Image 1: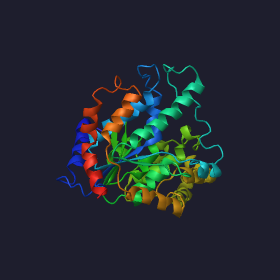
Image 2 (image 1 turned 120 degrees about the vertical axis):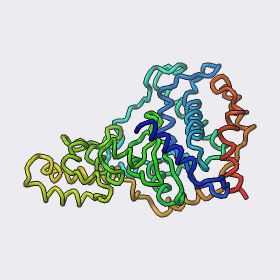
Image 3 (image 1 turned 90 degrees about the horizontal axis):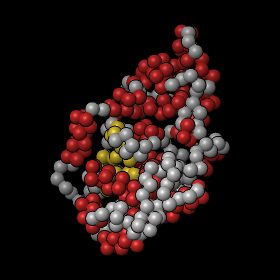
Image 4 (image 1 turned 135 degrees about the horizontal axis):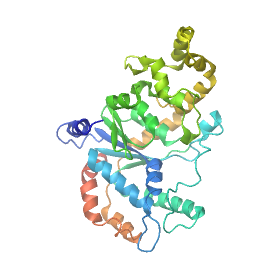
Length: 353
C-alpha cells in the first residue's frame, strides 16, 4: 500500500461520521488483541524503572495503545484477552495446537531478568498490572473463560458493534479474513492498515477467501501444518477465481473445483483431494467467520459490551504510575492521559447516564 493510499484511508476513517456525536460510542471502534500486543512489546523492550525492575511490557503496551488511539481517533476502545482455558476447544480438535510456541518470548536478554523463570514471572506480574491500569481508563476490557481472544474479537466484530467502522489491532494475520467495507486490520509491526484492496494486493486473494489461503498454508506459530508444496501463489495460480470478490469459496467448493480440473494435469488438484482431512482440520482451527462458541458465552460477551464504559480516573492512574516508578519511562503522563483519553471519556460519560 502506498503512503498516499494509506493516508487516504486514514483520512476517510477520521472523517466518517461527520460532527462528533457522543451518543454513538460504537461509531468507530478500535478492538485490541491484548495478549498479542503485550507479548510483542514485552519481547523487544528492555525498559526498566528507576529501581531496575523490568517494565517493558507495561510501558510498551500503554505506548502502543496510545499511538493507535491518537492515530485512529476511535469513539470506543475494546481490549480483548484470552480467557482461562481459551485454547481447550481447539486442542480437542488438534492436541498439538500451539505446542511449538516458545517457552520464552525473549528476543534479547532483558535487563533485570536473569533467567526464563524471572521472565515468566515478570510477564504475569506486568500483565496483571496492565489490567489494573485499564480499569482506570475509558476502555472496555474483556476476558471470558473458555475462548481465545480471536473468537471473542470475531464474534463482537460481526455481531455486537453495529455497522460503524471497526479497526482490529493485531499482528495476527488470521484477522484478515474479517476485513470488509467496515472492518480493517492495523498491524503495528508492519505499520500497515489492511482494507479489502490491500489484502488482495499483498496476498492475491480477496479477504472473503483469505481463510482458504490460510488452511492451505497453515500457521507455524500455532503448530498448524499446511499442505506441503502448496503456497498461496500456487493456490492462486491454480484457482485464480479466489481473487474475485464475487466468489466466496467453501472447502466443498474447492474440492468440487479440484475434481473438475484434476484431469488437466499437475500435482495441485491431486494434492487438494489427498489432503481433505488436513484441510478440514485447519479450517475448524482457523476460521473466524462463524466461531464455535456457546450461547452462554455469546451472552456474556454481549453483556460486557453493553455495560457502561469505565470513566477516566486520572488521579488514580497517575498514583499507580508513580507507585510503579514509571515517570522516567513515560514523562508528562498527565498531558498524555488528557490528549489520548479525553474524547473517549466523553463517549464513556454518555454510557454512564
